Image 1 (cartoon, rainbow, N blue to C red):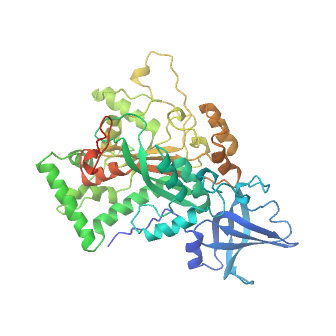
Image 2 (cartoon, one colour):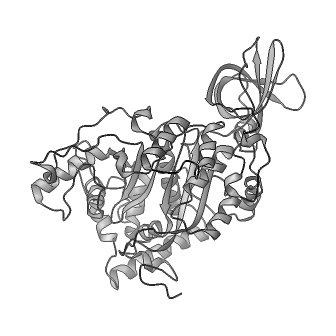
Image 3 (spheres, rainbow, N blue to C red):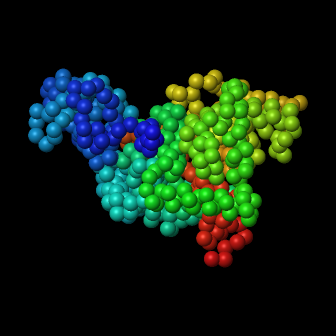
Length: 494
């Protein structure tokens, strides 16, 4: 049976819901109120989630919509019924209303004032940003296949051309809080002078943001579902072009093994044979291999078919410390409160026999905008966690800060870190305190704080280095070999 390529982890948008409305069925929808009309015993509002579909919500009863204003983000539970009025075929009869983010109706609200629309930082975050809707047409005119269904941002493209940037993430949140889902594949420039086979000074970053994402598990589901859907399509899609892609991958793999060694394919295939799972139980890591069929592509087959492992940073360091004590196998001693080195990342992916999410890193290792773990409903471990005993800290009085944030790094065999992301701090007061703790000027981030002040919603996102992804898929050992004109530290000839 041919596998499904659909991103099942994402709930349907209003546009998809209205294409085939389930009448008289209880459902939950999310979005922003574009207008509110209250009468004596009934109230109406237009709900939008940025997907291109609008839904009329109806509250029956006196005062049930009191306090709701244009721009407020809400979660509504109710049922769809045929509309008694004109202008829409169906409407939502609301049973329960949850306000996710309030929106001050005063003129300071960016959703209700005319700003300098040529400045991406002044793009109104609510309704439809001027640069966002034209870019949906631009997206249709450039029909490339992307791992994440979403929208590009015209203002973001202007920003990248002006400034060197390590990430588009902060600015990508602006269209996300109007369109619900957004992505960009943009040039990025590495801040630190890394000189390894996995790093370039200039590279492309695929970044995505998803609104109404409340738990880290939900975000991980979207990332995993998207990656595995792409790999399944690569392996099983029918057609001349699809078969040519698979043949090209086999040619590249053959070239690696005959001429330049196996790149990182040998390391990848070695990891597939591991029989140790996250919980310590045994089970063949090759259960999903198609033996005898396209062996050069076995790493893709395994990743496409096998669910990704998930492990907390604390548990990962515990595993690393145990391995280090038994084998003294690491150059860098694993220590709770410090970042994982490449050798640690590769060992974890190999030990767990495939891609693995490492979650909930210490707060001090991550940026200010990440949501604390204790605000993630899916985080069921004790807070603060108990750090493992590290050989590097034995005999000292050092006590690391045990606060963690709802984030992840996705590790791949032979590569190490492939992607990273987090839930974002969506609460204004907590974000301001995080900025102060980081020593940041809140005035410089006033536009970013406005996204929280006016109709904020729980959301999250992630980023993936595009050339590193191509390296893993093809099995090429050096990221410079998948770029026509690579630029790295000390080398910028072209």
